[in-house]
Amino acid sequence: MDNDKAVATFFELKESQAVSEPAHLDELWAALEPIGRDFMIGAWSGGELPSGHKMDGQLELARWHGKTFNSIYDVKPLVCRDDDGNLYSNQELGKGEASLWDVQFRGETTASMVYDGQPVIDHFKKVDDTHVMGIMNGKTSLVRDRHFYFYLERE
Image 1: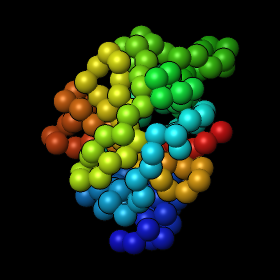
Image 2 (image 1 turned 90 degrees about the horizontal axis):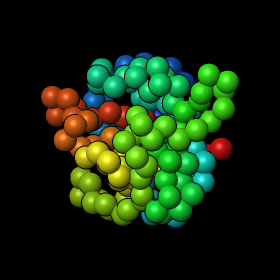
Image 3 (image 1 turned 135 degrees about the horizontal axis):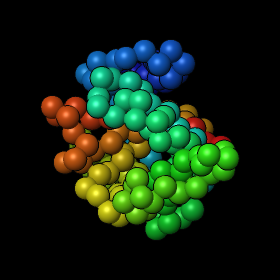
């Protein structure tokens, strides 16, 4: 799959929310461009790319809104909405906050968010100037060697 096809497929999946096979999402991921940490600075809303992972639907239940990257060492990984609709950093759910690193994943170095309090890393690749695809990785997030897939959209 080339980058243009990957971008088109990403937007189709984002819109439809159809459950995809992890192998299909991995193929899409492989065609996207790695990014540096600075690309991620700012506020992002998010959603999932369903794949049958145990996390599918869980972020919605937590009223997850997205992530905020104030700087490489000040990341709010689980920005959620409270009962009044206000945004807050859910440090209880996230077991703290996070930081941004350039991490090698699947043979490429790309911007990755490392949680402070749990063995989880979110890796990001560029879809376009306002969207990234994410893969949650780590020993507590893998289910039968499957990752959780999501996206972020720049606010």
